[in-house]
Image (cartoon, rainbow, N blue to C red; front, top):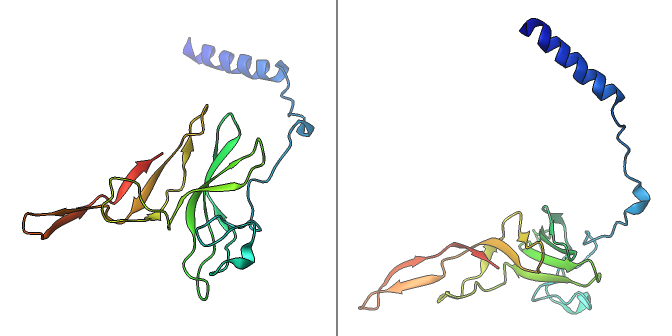
Length: 173
């Protein structure tokens, strides 16, 4: 019975597919694309005001490399990006950024390598590397990201000797 039933079911499925509804591609005129950032945009940093990039030293950096973005229902986009680095310009900038595409607002730095890690941090550590894929809440502007950094907590014994330093990564909102 299986020898007959299986081929009959396969023929029936193929026939249904052949006479089923056609898939129509979406009308592309319904989509309006907007640039969030590109390689010509300046990265917001402590050393650079994108409104007057010539006034900064070291020079302002432009975005260069991007990871997958996340976007919420309010059109707030969050993404990880980097600048170029190397001889004469120093280390690249790495960070997590947002841009409100509903208002086409400015790019906002969430954190980068110059940002001090929030409490508890008795060492004044800064972030060293953001992850590749920050997330955003679907219905609010809450952004969440893992962050790597130098140790943030120094433990000292009763004699004043540093016993250990700990805390080299965390989840931040």
